[in-house]
Image (cartoon, rainbow, N blue to C red; front, side, top):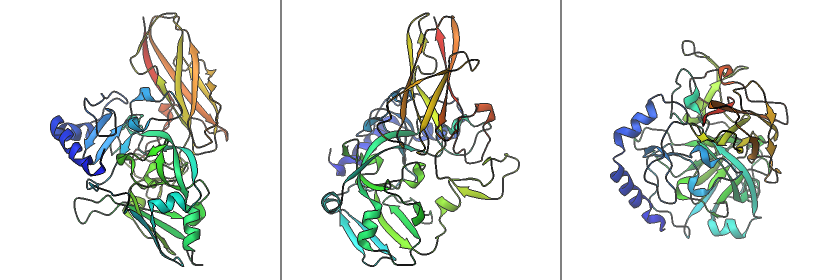
Length: 401
């Protein structure tokens, strides 16, 4: 598909589905988590996904995709903040600029990235900070995502450190600012810019041009995106176009107003009394999601069912996934995959289950990290007004017949 044709095709899809009011309603109405239907149509390069908006594109991956450690590109979730996305990007002329407190300003082409730097790969989970937001009670502001605002891919590109080394940092450099090519429809709306402190850099932070062995899908940030393993996706800037090094933190809307949680031990508050001090969300907490069976699945009495799903955290690694098939009364240990994809990737798990009782059965999973962090019960999740970092024990209820 020619990139220049992308939004022509997208416009046709939007017109055909008459999304206007329905997507607005889906985004603002409280709904049971994961009780949404897949759209009957698909964006280019994507299979039909759960759609919240067509402009900007907001697409969620269905739960049943999460049975293996890698998420297919065409089923990978999509989250844009601004409606104005370039309609054409020419890979032959595209460059990324590196400027600010550097000894040598750079304009690096895609070909330069692929031929003049060491090529590296990292497999990592990309998860929206608002994933599972619809599970918060009472409702929290923002898109009412179910459990599919996430995915795991093998990202290929160049270490950010290597690029900064080529530019040469001046001695007073402290912060790195990143911005992409998406723009707001209204001129006073702030651009989507993120900042990273130099002390947060390691060899796993890369500029990626490939995802699971293919060029980045257009909706996932083609031709280049920032990859920060272990961090929530609001820091993974898409369609990356500029890197600016500074000596002072620059106040920005998406770091100083949005994507923040209360700065207290529980990162919580109440709807009646907001906590006055906040901090940006950064590293992910431990979490698991059941991919099979899905909510309201029907399974046969005394059949052999294999419960499957994925678990992850911020990179410390998953120690165990515990599974309950009786609503939390008893727990057993799931089998984990070999973990060869690395500490930032999903650990796929499976658990054999033979349903011996007819009727409704609730399956629950609880991930435990290698530093002892474990998922809490849903009733123990503390509320925050942004609906961020929800990681309650996952559960699905199935019918045994």
